[in-house]
Length: 126
Image (cartoon, rainbow, N blue to C red; front, side):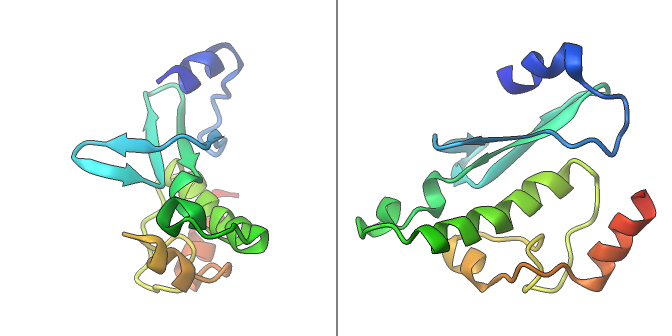
């Protein structure tokens, strides 16, 4: 992935450093038609690319975009793209922004508040 290749000379060796790229292009991974984010990397540098294309209302039904709704969706999925690189397990709490989302409806059901297990896992990395 060019994103991480371009980071090479600037990459930190600190495993807590997260690299997240954001794009308006659709992302495809394996057999999935689209994904909200993809994690990639090697032993030296890891990162994620997050796409907002499938988070946009007009992508689904052509309706005018609600900027606050789009920003809320992007914020939730940036949590996923960031924490994937840290190896923190996904929570069972469906309201946690780091919980798994298999569609836009699930993204909308998430909150912006981390569950206790995820917050504690982050605290251990500090």
